[in-house]
Length: 268
Image 1 (cartoon, one colour):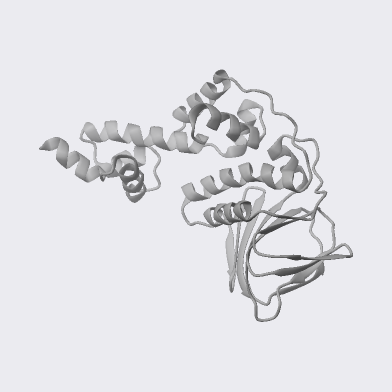
Image 2 (cartoon, helix red, strand yellow):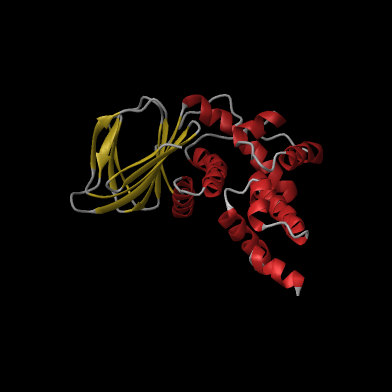
């Protein structure tokens, strides 16, 4: 996953999704446009926006949405602290993620401090050095896109009900591939669903995202192997944890104890 930084700017790419987080003072952008959809959430400070001949102020808690090709410009007042996050999605990807034929934003901004904060946290997760956090960030962003799009004036189509059979099929796929967690797009393709529909349906029946469900299964199986006396490093490798420290972290989070301490207590 290529990641770069320039002063207070951080960028990362996850598949066709690009995210940015920027902390700056008085930053300004000349008039320009993008080939993709742009979603920006102001977390601190005010942005003066010029968009296709219109001007408006986006304060903290505002989410601005730009269609591909729209001319935009603006920025923060000189010397004013400004923090924002951005999400960049190709035209086909946004519609496909939501299971829609086409998307076009009707309103350029909405004020929703709660949603803006959630976008900020999701983007920060996508920028993490930890692969699991990046995956969770991508899932969180996918679910948030429906709320952003709805607030921008696009109605979502009703989702068809997905039954236990489809969810069970995905659970079997995940259980058979614990060493290699399938990507979100791969899982959605397997079930013939959009990414958003996949996440909503799976969470409805299990209370977890697919990757969270796979992690709890991986951690549970680790407990069984540790009971057999297998070394923690070997268990981490067999079950596809990045390394032993990742196993330690997730095992402790689930069971309140490290793998080593768990085996020590079993021997007492």
